[in-house]
Image (cartoon, rainbow, N blue to C red; front, side, top):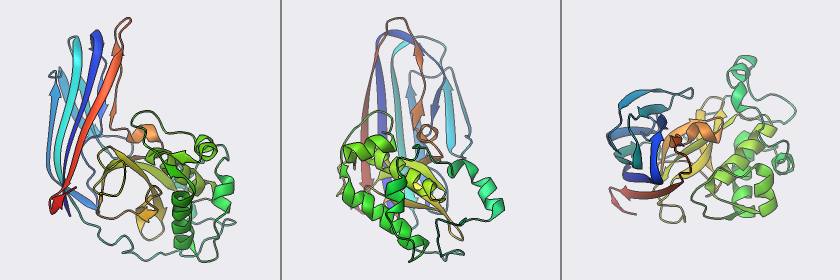
Length: 282
């Protein structure tokens, strides 16, 4: 599937400010599930400098810095991505069985996956994680957990802000896509399954957040590698998702980060995201 995305993020400041270096993760990832066909990036005001690299999670990272004050910052991205994974189950597991009492991974793999095996919620997701049975194997457990979150929590819209903690989401009984992703990740890690945060876009017409950034989880499956699970939808990730960035923590997958200096200055952020399937408009 080919998907066109336009993303315009604007910041306005109450008085002239000096922008510290900003870091963008707005170019979609290149991996077996997707390929970037077109990409353009426009920044206003023009940066004093710009550089490209990879961050610790191998996301495409654009660094920008400025040499004068400004009252606005606008970042506009236009991209066309071809998504390639129409069947999310195109794999064979080397360890299909799953038990919470034994390790899913070899010692070598556990060492390499260490940072995505550490629980982040202080045990808040333990009851949720242990409420799903394991007798039917790893995939049944993961799809069951995915469905349980979808069925048990109301999806709400919250455009800005960090994810809620797993405890906050459980207490509220509701969450935005990023909150449910963090809850799924913490539940997985609680029972020894490697999981990480993914941010990007969703080209679907049946989700309230279709024209905002979307978030989901990825799980490392023995024999299959990283595979996406979307607890907002209760589905595995296929060709309707476009991934921008992944990380063990939400902050490492944030599309744009940076600060400013200016005594007494305040800022306001607005975003406009358009997602279009090239085989028909969303």
